[in-house]
Image 1: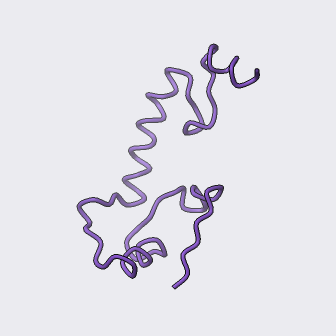
Image 2: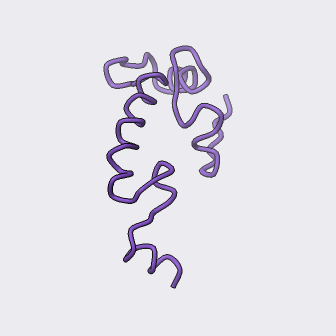
Length: 80
């Protein structure tokens, strides 16, 4: 089995999530044995939670899932 980690692709096509039976799930199962589903959140629930957090973070100037910040003091530092 080949494990590939590409930080720039963490979000990838699946948005950084996993679902039962997908590639990520199969890799973890092969490497570590059965996945304890209690500690894993599937893609649909992950997206619901991210959307809730997106709304909270947007009110303080953090958007695009943390990739963009419009807080004046921080924005000034980023361009310095």
